[in-house]
Image 1 (cartoon, rainbow, N blue to C red):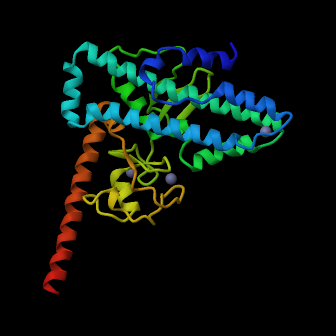
Image 2 (cartoon, rainbow, N blue to C red):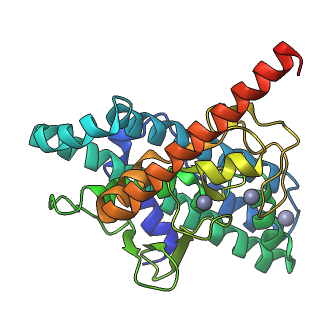
Image 3 (tube, protein in one colour):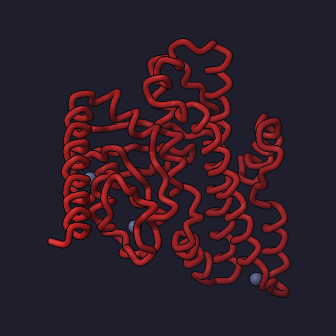
Length: 304
Ligand SMILES: [Zn+2]
Ligand SMILES: [Zn+2]
Ligand SMILES: [Zn+2]
C-alpha cells in the first residue's frame, strides 16, 4: 500500500475518538500543492508545514504530559501500587491512550519525512532535507520528543502485565542494557530503527532521576544541576538563561526541562540495586550542598 493510503486509513481509524482536537499533517493537500509546484511554485509550503509540525508537537506533548501526570503525580510508590490494584479497565484505557499517542507521533513524523522527500524530488533541491535540521533546531522534530521516550518507558513499565497491545501503525519499544551503552529502541513499521541513548554525558552512566533539556539531551538531575551551576535543592528551574547544555551548547534549555518520571521508574524496576545506590549518592550530595550553602549564608550574615 502506498503511504498516502495508509495515512488516510490511519486518519479514519480509532484515533478519531481520542484525538479529535489534535491536528495532523495535511498530507493530501500538501501533495496537491507540490503537484501544482511543477508549474507555479507555492512559497508557503515550508511555513505551513512548520506550523503543522509545531501544532502536532504541542498537542502530543500536552496529551502525553496529561496521561503520564495522572499516574505519577501522586508519587512513585503509590503509582506502582495503583498499577497493581487498578481495575483492568483503567489499565486498558491508559495503555490504549498511550498507544494512540505513540501512533499519532509516528504516523505524522513519517508523513513529514515523505512529503519533504517529495518536495526535494519536485524541486530538485535539498531544501526539504535542510528543513529537517530546522525542525530539530526548533525542537519540533517529532521523533526526538522526550515525551516519546516517556511513553516508551510507560509502555515498558506495563510489560509483564501482558498489555502490550499494538497495531499495524504503532512502533515497538524495547530496552537494551546489555549492549555497551544503555539504549531504548523504537522500531517503526517501515523497519526503521530509532535509538535513544540513555547514557548521561556527564557521569557516563545510565541516567538516574533524569531530565530532558529543551534541546532533547538527557541528564541525571544531579549532573544537569552541576552543569548549570545550581544547587540540587534549587532545581533546574533556577538555572540562569545563559546556562548551556553540556552536549550541544545551546543556551536557555533548563527552564522547560522535562522530568522523566516514567524513565526513572523503568530504571528503578529493572536495576533496583543501581537505582538505590544512585539515590543514596544523590541524597548525600544534596545534604552536602545544603550544608555548604547554609555555612556560606551564616558567614555572610555574621561577617567572617
Ligand atoms: Zn514549489
Ligand atoms: Zn549523570
Ligand atoms: Zn543539548
